[in-house]
Image (cartoon, rainbow, N blue to C red; front, side):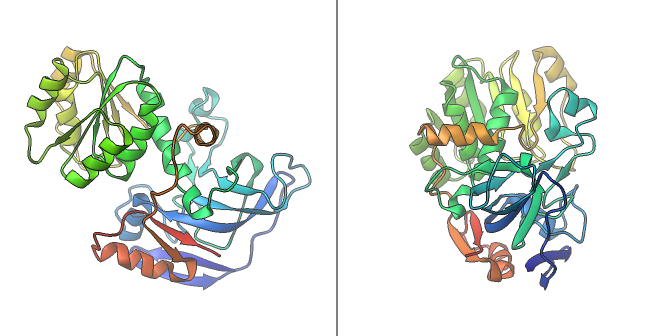
Length: 338
C-alpha cells in the first residue's frame, strides 16, 4: 500500500509498504477514505511541533470503511463507515484512572507520536472506531475530529447559559468553538483581525464581533460586558494572547488555553491571584466523538462546508506545497483516497 512519510521536516515521500494486518482479537482494519490536513500536521511538516517524532506518517483526522475485524470485535462490522479516534492511552496512569485519557502520562497520538492516517490502510483497536452519520461524505466527516476538540474546550470551560464567552480568533478553530459554545445558550463575543472571518462568525450566531486591528478591544469588551467576559477561550494562540486574556477576563472568570507555544508568555501572577482566575489547558478531546456525532444527527451543529479544497491522496505532497504557497483561497484541505 501507499503511505506518505515525513522523513524529517520539509521532506515528504510517497512510499510503498506492506498493508497492516489484524493482530489481536479486538483489532479493526480500516480502508482509509479521507484524511484532513490540520494546522498541527503543517507544524510537523515544518519541524515546529514540540511533540512530534520523525520519521512519521502524519494524519489524525481519519475517516474510512471497516475492511476486516478481529474475532472479538462487536462495535463495528466490515463495510461500516467510521472515524478513527486519534488518542492511544495507557489506561493505568493517574489521568487515565480519573477519566482523562486525553492527557495520559504515556499519551500517543496517531500521526504525531505513532503513525497516522496518511496511508491507505490503518489498524487500530475497536474502541477507536466511531460510526459516521449516514450520508455524510468522508471528506466532510474529517471535521468531526476538530469539532471534538472544540467540544472539549467548552467542557473544560464549564460554560453555562449565564456566561459571556469571549473567543479570541475566528479562524477554523474559533468557528468550531463557536458552534460548540452556541449549544450552551451563553452570550458569545468573537474577536479577529479579518472582517471576513468575523462575518462568518456572525453568520454562525455570535452575538457581537470585534475587529481587534481596527477597534479598541478592551474598550469594546467593557462596552459590551461592563466587567469583562466570564469565560475567555484562546483560539488564536500567540505569545501575547494569554496575558491579554488575563487583563480582559472578569474576576472569577475562566481562561482556556489550547496552543502548543514554546515561547514564554509574560503573565503577571498578580492578575491571576487578585482576580482569582482559573487558567485551564484543553488538549485534544476526551471521548467527545460520540457527543459531536449525536449533536450532528440531531441537527444541532453542522459539519459540512468547512473543507475548501480536496486533493487526491496521490497528490498529498502537492497539497502541502499549496499550503506553503500562501494561496489565500486555501482554508481546510482534505485528502481523498477514492
